[in-house]
Structure formats: structure tokens, C-alpha cells
Image 1 (cartoon, rainbow, N blue to C red):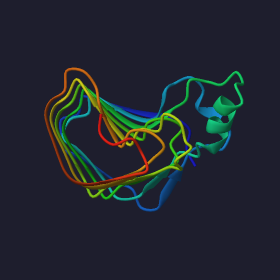
Image 2 (image 1 turned 135 degrees about the vertical axis):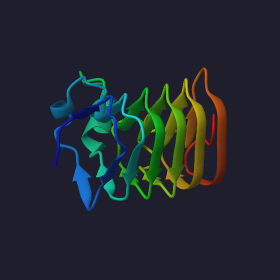
Image 3 (image 1 turned 90 degrees about the horizontal axis):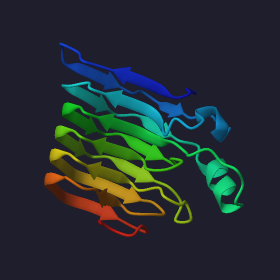
Image 4 (image 1 turned 60 degrees about the horizontal axis):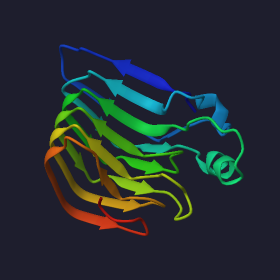
Length: 173
């Protein structure tokens, strides 16, 4: 079980993060506060994130929003900002509070053999969100969420997607 964490570059060497087992977000959604993220990689180049499961424990947060309570902004499970030469492979993301995987202002990203799962009633749980990024490939991925399977934001170029299983979400937009 881990609270929000930031890995900040720049780094000179290639980095591999191997996740063996499951990382679990706190069940109290307030523990992540208003950070907007759970696991953040910022300006970390030449990184591979391999295997494992991220359990965002989002049910309490979804209930808070559904009931119209005063909720924090919510957290994305794993975010890459200004990162280049990224590989995300064999990762499973469950029940993110918000988006599961965010790729923002990155270059040369490969997402392969990833599974993303959240109930069809989970709001704003886009599987993968790509924005302001160049050269992103998403392949061999299964996405079952309550919102978009893959959402494409502004300034995204050279995005390639193939072998995507999507549903019950809203598809690719």
C-alpha cells in the first residue's frame, strides 16, 4: 500500500521499474488529497515499467462523487509527464479513481500488453489518455472501464493503436 509518489528526472541511465505483485492505493480516497495523481513520472527518460498490478481503490471516491459530497479532485493511477522513450508492458490497472494511464507531453512511448479494468459505473475512468505527445503506440491492450477506453487530447501526433479490446467504455475519442 502506497500513497502518492513522484519519480522526477532527469536521469542519465536507462531505468526499469519491475512491479512484482500489487501496489494498492489507500482505501481512504482523501489520503491522495488533491494531488491529481497516485504514481507520477516526470522528466524521466528511457524508462520501462514492467508487469504488476496497480489497484487504485477508486470505489469510495466514485461513491463520494455520486452522492455529491465535497470530494477531492481525484487521482490518476499512473502518469508520465515530459518523458521520452517510455515502455509500459504487462501492467494491469484496476479501479483507478480517475484516468488509469496518462501520457502527457511525451515522445516515443510504447504501451503493450496492458490490462485496464474498472466497473461500467465508474465515472471519468478513461483507460488511457494521451495528450500533447508524439510517437505513441498502444498495442495488445484490453480496456474495460466506465468511460473512454482511449481518450486523445490536443496536440497528439503519430498515435498508433492496434489489437485493442474495448468495452463497456465509450471507445476511442
